[in-house]
Amino acid sequence: MKLTTTQSVLAELLETAKNGISTRPVDPILGSLLIEASDEGRLTVIGTDLNVSIKTTAITHILQPGVVALNAKLLADTVNNLGSGELDIEVSERICVISHSTGKCRIVGGNPEDFPSIPETQNCTEISIPSKKLQAALEACLYCCSADETKLILTGVHFQLQGENWSCASTDGHRLALVSSKLEGNYSPISFTVPRRSLTELGKILSTTAENSSCTLKVGNNTVQFILPNAELTSRLLEGEFPHINHLIPNSFANELIVERKGMEIILKRISHFAEKKHKIVKILWEVNDQQATLMTGNTDIGDAVDSLLIKTQTSIEENIGIGLNSGYLQEALKHISTDEIVFRFNKPLQPVIISPLGGLLDQLTLIMPVEVQDFEKPEGLAKYNTDTSKPENENETAAENTTEVDKLPEIEKVSNETTNVTDTPQSDTPTANKSKSRKRKQELKPEPETTAV
Image (cartoon, rainbow, N blue to C red; front, side):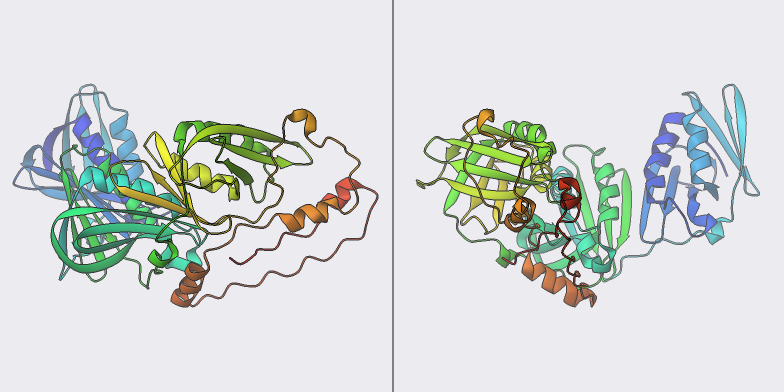
């Protein structure tokens, strides 16, 4: 193999393709990139970990076609540290020599015949989605995927297409994200679930594509292929039935409240470090008559905080409503919304809370299950906060009873267990600690809050 290319072109090909390689390859050949030079003047670089494969291609000056497998890290580090300009690459008997303006490098390669072939997508359905819409959909869904490998189907994003409608969804059992849009064309019903890792790498490729480009999906029985102008990504699909989540989203809402996204993000960042570390609960008091929302949180051992921002009401509710939410989940939901304003929709304090952008490229929502908490009375000022350190002996137990762990979406939990044949191990009861004069010791031994079913 013999060719001439530029340092920038080769570096870009390597940077994209090496994302398909595992950080800890089980076989040395899987730590390599396959480089192919064709008679048509096309230079192709492929990286794979057997579950996901990334192929990138560029047109360059090929003097002699050929193929070689080179260590990905060594090759990428070498090329990235070369100066800009032309590179002459020559391969003979698995030895690759890269010549540049001031010197040359020699890399010993592996056997290209040992490199695994990319799975072919057979009996496939082809779908075309605008690249920027697909990128926005992935950014709005990936953060809700589960990290629990025992429920493998929940570690991916579920795609559904029917007619001119398409959607993708993800959930970890505590929250879910759903986006949808329209397509050009009419498609037969099809659904499939793609692993999070594959889509994370796809998102990186999509971020480099042109604004008006499209991504072609070729969906087969076991694999899906995403074809873009500058790269192709092939991924295995997750097996199993994804939970039916649509019936968990209410059809109508008694309360619709609009807030400024950036303002709520700033307040959450300001007060969330006062929240109890395990459950991270923030209490939101929606004061409809005063057109404001008051956010409260606190841990009696370190302090507490309260802040407020203006709201707009879309409904004719007249009474104040208090809701407890996991501040981490809420912050992540806001982070993945790009519009200036967001809408909170809900019915009762312990029913699902839907968070959506006001406008935007896609129909997008995040569902978060509230937490049962008490005492939504708004403090008038810091002077009225309880600073008395001589608490009654049973105060910590009372607080534990009033604050519960974030509720799981019950139907999702049920379906995911049936799909993966995994039964959650029940938590053992925490033994009751003997009373002690030391408040610190008593805090360490307080029982864990119990999760309440919705």
